[in-house]
Length: 243
Image 1 (cartoon, rainbow, N blue to C red):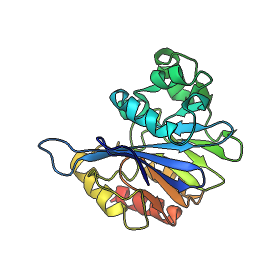
Image 2 (cartoon, rainbow, N blue to C red; image 1 turned 135 degrees about the vertical axis):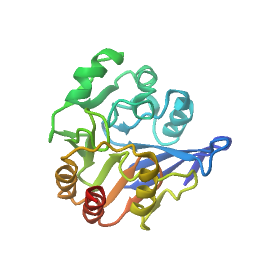
Image 3 (cartoon, rainbow, N blue to C red; image 1 turned 135 degrees about the horizontal axis):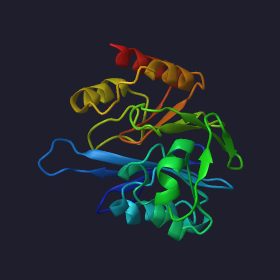
């Protein structure tokens, strides 16, 4: 792990082959434990970042990316759904990377990003694949899982890394970059206090579809990334949501 900003604690760690977790821990005044914000950078011929981080965090994330690759060579700025920590600094990224474009699902493009972004997005249909070079990603629509109509996730097929956004969110600011320990228990404890999941009737069906991709790494947006039998963990989440 390399720390790229001593003051903020922003750090970079390779969690799969040429896939880097960029992490900034945030200690909240008056609150226990704090929180963490992760972005995932796939370095390839057509490099991609998943989640931008909040707009005010942009300089930290930009410098972290620059420690791995030239920022101006970034090609895709991707995210799960429209929210500040997902795409708050989207236009800042488009400004520093002249060839870059937003990458999102079709609903996000039509409803928000065609208007919000300074350049038109590349909108991926449900199940559509996109080659980045050695890596390839596939988009999965997951409306209202865990929230937002336009929500979706990317599966990187070569490394079996599921960029799973707000699934398995773990509270607290101090997490190892990647773990094989239990994250379902902590993430369920966090969910029970916050109730940030929608109560969609189709959650189990969507989680089962993600499980069939058999991910080996779960790239969580908040907390540690996780390595192991991702299909089993996704099905365990489906069971927990059904209770």
